[in-house]
Amino acid sequence: MTALTLSTSAAPGLRADAIVIGVAKGTKGPVVAPGAEAVDKAYDGKLAGVLETLGASGAEGELTKLPAPADFKAPLVVAVGLGAESDAKDETDGFGADALRKAAGVAARALAGTKKAAFALPVDGPGAVGAIAEGVLLGAYAFDAYKEAANGSAKGKNGKAPLAEAALLGGKPRDAAHKSAVARAVAVCEELNRARDLINTPPNDLTPAIFAGIAQTAAKEHGLKVQVLDDKALVKGGYGGILGVGGGSAATPRLVKLTYKHPKADKHLAFVGKGITYDSGGISLKPAGHNETMKCDMSGAAAVFAAVVAAARLGLEVNVTGWLALAENMPSGSAVRPGDVLRMYSGKTVEVLNTDAEGRLVLADALWAASLEKPDAIVDVATLTGAMMLALGSRTFGVMANDDAFRSALHEAAEEVGEPAWPMPLPEHLRKGMESQVADIANMGERMGGGLVAGLFLREFVGEGITWAHLDIAGPAFNEGGAFGYTPKGGTGSAVRTLVRLAEQTASGDLG
Image (cartoon, rainbow, N blue to C red; front, side):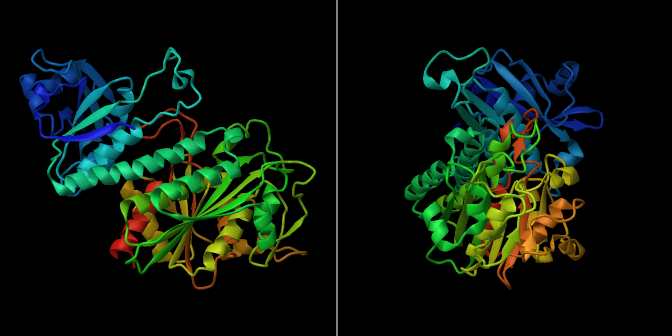
């Protein structure tokens, strides 16, 4: 991962391959952002005009390269758009955290193959330092484990190593708050990028057992307790949902419990992640064109895994338990069939009307297991429904909850860290559609509002009196389009930062 340093050096004298500056979109043209004063001075105060001549406007995501002045030790200046000046600034008149994150991410990605870049973006405190650091680390991400270059042979035509080092100008190397902001960014982004790696890994190399093994290794490294229930233990425990979904695959299911405990903590959060390492749809087979990206159906479990490890690395004063419900959904003679009835870990029975509505089945068992520990709150994360993508698009996840205040808090936490989210209801009238003649509940209901139906189903398996929320990340979990901001093509690590922020708020007492 890109190495980060804090530097008070002036841009002209810094040895680097490029100097990154910010440009905002003003009402009369591009505006050079604070942090680039020395660069602007070297262009006789006319840098904004030069950029405008080159076609730059300061729009978000825009990137313009130009030769550095002759007396600079860096040969290149990279101007990156911060967006409309009024939109990019927050209420303190400083540039907002996500505008800085996105700009740093765009620049870091564009500088792949570069050894060192200096980021002269606006810094008005540790918050800005942390945002720029996150943008660099997330924007520089690349998944090349299966490329020839990663195995030591010559790089392909477009193969470039990620940016090796980033110096954050304006950051104070001896300032405790600035150093802490960078350390936090490194811990969170390393784990988020690990989640991205897991999501991008082909399903033949990430079975439930392999995923569980990775969790065990990480737990040992970071001082977490880990418990793995294999298929035999799941049978003994009566986890009918996970067993039913995983029954059609030669790769047997797992339930992984990761536990982080702080000696002074008096609050306990439980995170539950859907971990379908490949989803064919089972007997209710997905149509052609819908299978190719189904390695990403374990994004919820990857997010939970990353968040628990990040909480441990940050030493947060809160207890966090992560539950990874891992299975592969395949069609075979032993697969669950439409019409089958499963007895869940909670004791409730579920009539399976569609085997492609499998995520809610594995989550139901894990939610009940989490409930038995009586945590203060449970949050589950899942690429659960295509309906949520129809409702909110490909960049926004839905937030449902059995408590309005908790739903609002999660929505605000997501927006604060730059993860677009939207609160969604749980309409009681939709519950009737899941009534079954043969079981306590069916795993399908009305087609319209399918994402909300799934949330109502999950609510049935949350223990009485426990605060719970459901994040449906089906849209933003896997980016099939081009990279943007600090978001790469492929696995994104959606919801990791929201979960970490929730844990931080709980630890500090800022959350009820």
